[in-house]
Length: 124
Image 1 (spheres, rainbow, N blue to C red):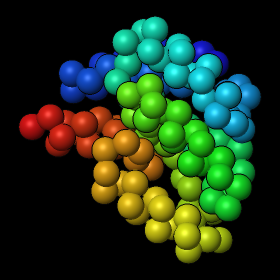
Image 2: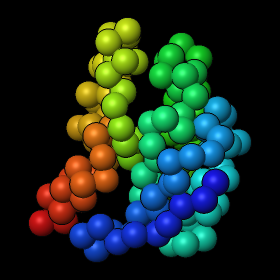
Image 3: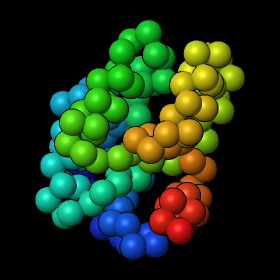
Image 4: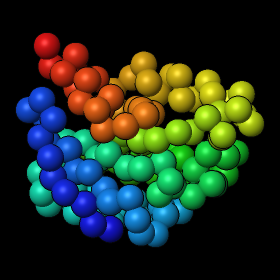
């Protein structure tokens, strides 16, 4: 997976490319984690389209495995893009997204500008 390191309000963020293979497993997440960690990122901004549908079906456990990998390596994850198709189909996912957005490990945001705004608010 390729991406670029950007600084958003003083926070190093590895911004993943829009194209490429989706993350389907925790092993796929390790590739992103390795690249982001090598570049010194604190956050990974991942397009929602890069996540396989299994991620959004909580009963599969894929979301938990992927998020846990990021937490184990002390990286935070921002899923960028529209996930309303998935949240409309699942009350559990809607609750999961709401709880994640209240925390500091995983955020679901519409775009990179929104991530920058959240990071600015957290920093100041």
